[in-house]
Image (cartoon, rainbow, N blue to C red; front, side, top):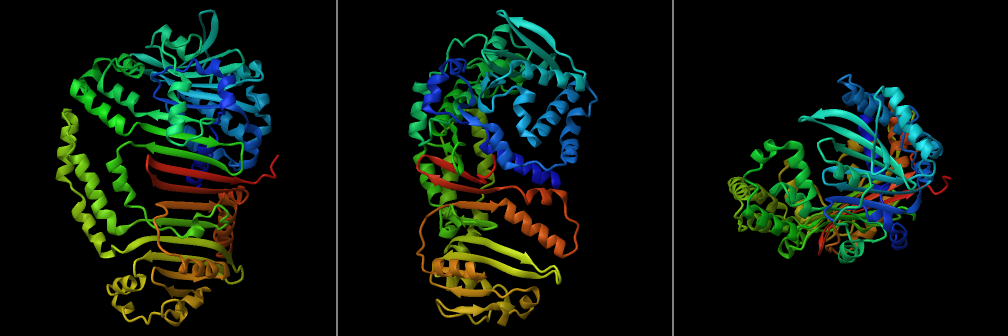
Length: 569
């Protein structure tokens, strides 16, 4: 549990802490961008200065005691007992400790506090580049890793530029290596293989420019405009380049690298894919689903991130759009300061036809590629539509939402002293739907429902609820069934009662970390349960996270917002 919570926090931070680029930044950093190859399958860029130290001090993601987490995460790396595993474990350990003391990050690593970076692939090799303020401090950081792990670098040179090679693990007759260099105020770290030639390493280390350089203004600017993303902060994962690597051994650098690293073994495995038919079919797929595109805004409050799984398949997007349902408006409010809120907008009545359309389009698409035809055959043998037919019984449902505004426990009794929460089920003729559902549970089949718009004290029907400090109410309207308790929940329920149904979303989730974990810790303390250390740490985590998933005309959009405590220095 401890590791999962901390890992979730790390992931949440990673979603917000990687890319930031402005148009002016693009111009100022054009020299660095000119090392990105045109056929890169993935890239993210952050070239406008971003105060990384202040951000890390704000989020305060790491508990004071990271040893247990560190032990779990590094055991897999060092289990072989090799120096290579110890090297990666030491690198991870230094990283975690730096996150606990971000004010020393610049001194210990040489990174600029006003952080700028790039990440991209040169073929199969991931390349991380970041601006430095102290090159010697950067080298000393790796010196400490070497001393701790006893894995020493090999000093090498290309075109007069010195770099370090750390031979990590053997792989298929070659080795996986970490290359590190510094030039022109930028540090470059590359994970690669000695099976690649010197020209490959020179491009990955930003010593030589690629023959075919990505033209930012021709390749990226139109994408940012098309998908309503901020060109000032941009990242992408390219379907076309990934699929070329599957259907050929030479159509891009990624394909050539895979072939060089895996050789005839890969060619044998992928023979059926290396055909003209598969190249044509996958090119069509890439045209319809060109990739994943994203941007971030880290210098504003709230911080935000947007990701789009892009699609030009209008038929598919029209089918997916039918699934959108109704989410209670208070769940979607950016100022919602609840402990926890979740809204699912799902038009159950359209679930079967929408999935049916998508299934038919996929399983009946005209493919000549043998592996894709085989996949279609398998799909037809496991049609899910029969299982979804049961959803027709709740076909009037348009969505459900749940909000916990406040929970406080009485330490003396271990029972809730305050509960403020609301649950809503939204549907066409919610009253009839609820009656129909309760028919399946005879003890509740004769519940005397309130008149539309009136409240019913549920303790009259379920006296046991009062013993747990609960006093929920039920209200029914034409479109909503509402169960709620507490002053704020009552206000939310009455506002929702007068709200007409609409297609306003698919999924919305939010959590106030400090309030949620404080409530959880207080609840456990009131019952006498032992308080896990991570709960105590999370009580001081000063951010509120909101996440939404929706269907747009040009793809599936995922948006995140993080409200940080701006009092941090």
